Image 1 (cartoon, rainbow, N blue to C red):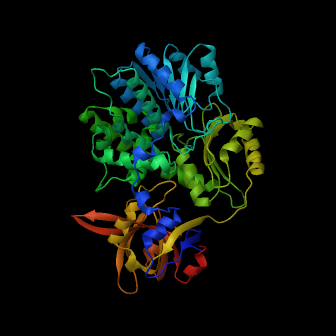
Image 2: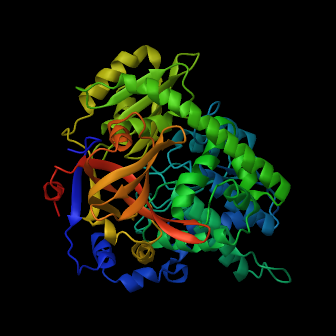
Length: 565
């Protein structure tokens, strides 16, 4: 058993002659490594008109552009929603369209389309991005009142609402193989479709055509932050978008990157762990309008000002998260199949993060509820593989214990009348059924410390970008001792790994202070087996390996016992 109470699954055995990169590729189902490395947007882009309703949506938008009808873009407050709005605002500005936008306030308005917002923009062509696929009543209201509403979304749906046009790879009547797209990916394809039709009618005669490729930084940003699989078209979006991000042409993104310390390179993990949380902090703590302004500003002074504000908001979010997590953990019960934590004082913008951390800590579906002054609870849910939390929410609505809600299999949200919290807990206890088992950590292979080198990590880059669906390779390093351990930041532990022959690399374990893992690291006792990922750090032009430790086990635990290749 590991120090974090997980079972290790080591996928491949190796020997001294093993080609590590080939093994990593095989573990990911990659048959032709050279072809995989030559990812190209040109070769990955589909004809956008293969999507149901794409042509109808594009033609209606062109009609609004030509007739000078105002277009209202209504989006979501997360990075995917904000990026989707930003793409359309940039494109519509270039083609001379009259455009407004609205992103709901998480605390006051909640997620998605509302009748109030539709009514506010009743004279506009409405385009809903990253929301709307399940807005059955709201879109019926729009249709009944003669308001054309186009939906560009990627959320699962079982019923097609009464939108003027709805482009969504999850439509029940959609036959394409692009269900992995985020909303910004769908929006970009719609822009490509609009642009192609505009060229057909010679719209750009005498003026410069928009550079659609310049929007791919936003598509890459959204694709990584929405944690959709980096496969197929998504991988091409991110690979190409990262090249554009590195050019530092988006003033806001450049300013946000400048708030990072020691950022020698920008990759998908930079987006996921640094840019994404700061951009999301705006919608969680204040207003997502801040992030939208950052991504669309043409003023470097404004960009710098907003970037610093987002950095401050993210620090506030981190402090609040730490306080909430400590209290939320007290709600966990060993004999329950789920964790449900509730408090009137919890910040609604943070409950999703806490639900995710509870899920990771206990290996159970986790629900965190913030109660408002009117007795209504707003819940955020995170689930484990094999437990479709969105289906559970749907059944809760049908049985009357949940007011409304929806989401994905692994993440959802809902509203509940707190006077029915007892009924909710009974429902969850009866409906959440799965075979309880210890969570697993999967590593690609076990490698002796002397094989973890800068050259190896650089060779692994052929598999990038890393993210959902293509995780950075994990290794087990057997029989190493912890040396030079110390606390860094608020709750991280920095250390060195040293083998019996004196070989050594630096490492860090995040958020492990005052945990069994952190205690072992700081005591520097005995040899351990270490599991984690390896990256390259650059300092004063010198490269070295940095090991990100996720878990450890006592050396007495046989590595072979963990393996189930």
